[in-house]
Image (cartoon, rainbow, N blue to C red):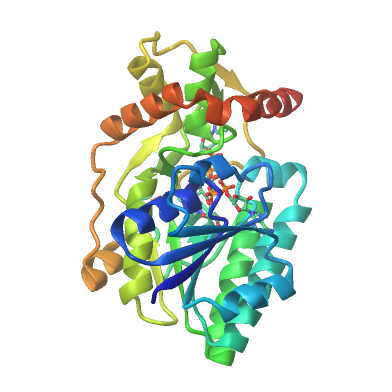
Length: 332
Ligand code: NAD
Ligand code: DAU
């Protein structure tokens, strides 16, 4: 493998992966990204031009996708509509990009015999009760709750069908909630950090008892590279770093780390159908492929992330006003 195509490489996790590839491999990377509201070329700005080529385009453009696959050894597919709240407001782009877009890539992989790794989410499994001692495994039945997670579940099932029916050389990973640099300010952690920087009170949905299993984006990247290099074709691997925290704890920690009163936030309208708890058992990935997370201290990772947003206001300032106007219209 020396030529990699990364779809959605100008988004949050995709751009972290491109940085990881440049730092840890010799691969040449081509990024295919539509630059929706969530994509940002500035996330790739400091990377060497001889290692990274940027192509502005849509994964639904079968002709363009075919051309790029002809010149690629392997594809890592991050491109998606990724935000649950947006999917409750307007599901259509989620159906187009997440389902039809994945179909377009699978057909190209089938024609060209290209190795494909599909990036997915733990949300395909639905949610767990707060007091459930269990965690998601590769055998947990699919039970998605939101328009977003149902389209991600649909895309996973397409990948499985194309492996079995057409012999496509694909793997899938389902990861928990990521945090780190380059995350859009619509998401929970960067929204609260940038609120504090702007002098706006952070916003907690409902009572904030919902639990998310946090992993640093850099650990997600190292896990994906491990699966790409050593994963067994047709297999699914769950990615997680034992980072369960409830939202109330996280918002209070952000305020404390930023030197504010831990209680200085507002409770706002809860998300419709809000999943209670996600939790990943990543034993298969760790035992079979020997992967381990490096960021085990959430508070230290969060402090680094706060520093990044403090020093990169030019990266997020434009998106902030539009994002807050959208939330205000929903009472959030
Ligand atoms: P993001 O919204 O930050 O980035 C998505 C990127 O895809 C953007 O750059 C956007 O421009 C691009 N894109 C959207 N539609 C496109 C299209 N039709 N053609 C080409 N490019 C298109 O998302 P993210 O948070 O980085 O998530 C990336 C992937 O990881 C998604 O597949 C998501 O489901 C998955 N995932 C995310 C998390 C998380 O915590 N954010 C956790 C597990 C899995
Ligand atoms: O679990 C993986 C998923 O994690 C990914 O598949 C998604 O792409 C990614 O967006 C993320 O989904 P969540 O819905 O869990 O993330 P979000 O950052 O939107 O919200 C995290 C939690 O914080 C959730 O319980 C809702 C809550 N929340 C969110 C926002 C934006 C708040 O309490 N206040 C907020 O302002």
